[in-house]
Amino acid sequence: MREEILKRLSLLSEEEIAAHAKIMAYNQKAGGKRNRRIIERRAISTSSYAETTSPVFLRAHPRFVRTPEHTHDYVEIMYVCSGSITHKISEETVTVSAGDLIILGRSTKHSILPSSSSDIGINIIISSDLFEIILNTVRRDSTLSTKHLLCFLDGETTRYKVFHCEQSVEVANIMENMIYSSFLKQQSDEYLLEQSIRILLCYLCGIPDTVDDTENISYTDKTKKKIIKYVRTSYSTATLTEGAQMLGLSPTYLSRWIRKHFGMSFKDLLMNERFSVACDLLRTTDTPIGEIIVHIGYENSSYFHKEFKKRFGMTPNSYRKLQ
Image (cartoon, rainbow, N blue to C red; front, side, top):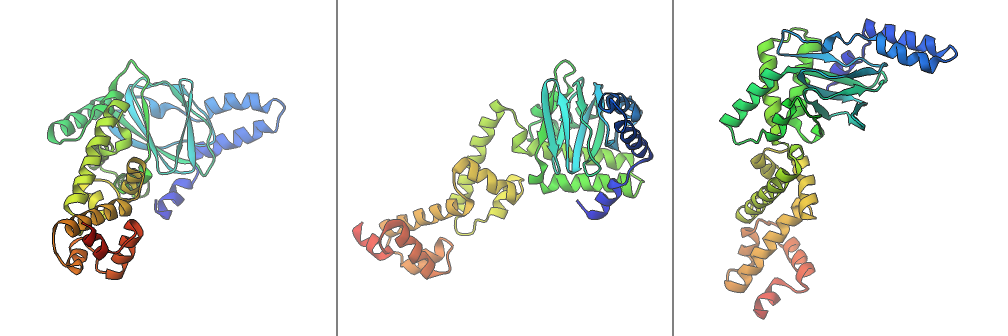
């Protein structure tokens, strides 16, 4: 996130200054720890959690004090700009770090532990009606799965999910734009804000880590097949960046995903396919070795010969003679 945005968000509000001063004063007294809990509950107003006429709005998360346990009849998103912020949800302790966001469903009872001045979070409040309308539109107009986001509208069950958005440049950019408009320009248009939320939810629908366990099996299999098909059909020109664009992911995230699910890097996956094609051509055709090298995407002949011998213990010509 841009330095000017973090600098602006780092400024303490009058509410935070007053809360911090009261806490520091009570800490100087005997029994300060016990009294501090009382002050933390009263120092910062929770009125921002009340119903609002706007279907979506942003606010900076108040620091230094504990946000009391509460529920609400809307969907809440917290994006952490720097540091980390810890939530207590039922019996679980959930820490959200910089670059990540958490979605809290309707009626999800939770509290938030005190944070320091460097722990900066932004709360996005989305009315249940708007959240549902957006997801229904996405489901109707695209192939994205909304199942794992629609569950946040369930008012009977505790629902939350942490999204590791440092893997998605698109999500980071959307958040930065919304925060810049709301807190630096201070002229965020409600329509533009709603459209930004629509795009944000679309990207969240496409982040693999957001799916549940049963859906994840299907997603993993489908994605592996797409990657294998891409490498097998485009082995001479395939790149990690192009593969990531094809799947709608960032290159960094795709690189990690491939290592996790294939047990090797994209480079190794591609090399395996290229040498597989080379061996097949050596076995079944009389195509000159130089042409095979160019065909599979290598320009450096000596590199190909070195790697081939390393893999098969012989030169390409010797390999051909054995067939």
